[in-house]
Length: 102
Image 1 (cartoon, helix red, strand yellow):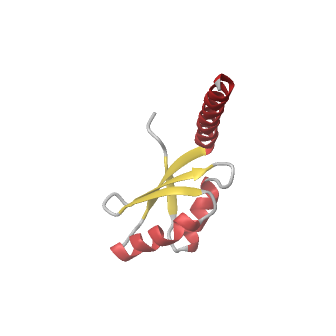
Image 2: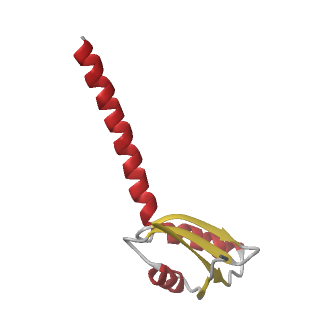
Image 3: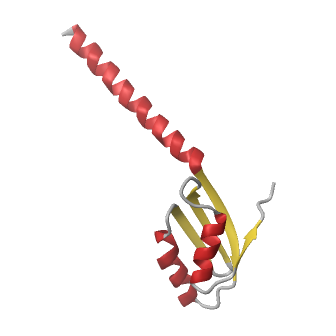
């Protein structure tokens, strides 16, 4: 009975540590970028929100109509800033990368 309890504890701890390790690996590959994009109307905003999340590697997206920006969180192993810029261009929007404040 003691061995069964110890085995169960070790198994649960192993699964827990494995889960944390997987999350850390995913976070290391995450990158984000903010583009300045001329968004003329709410319809344009909806178009970007509908299409860009389906680009390979995109994990999250926020379009700010008032500030004319598009923020994208992506997996840097599967895409890059240039690919995302091109995806916006295919939708008809010129995108300029905004540099991050340091």
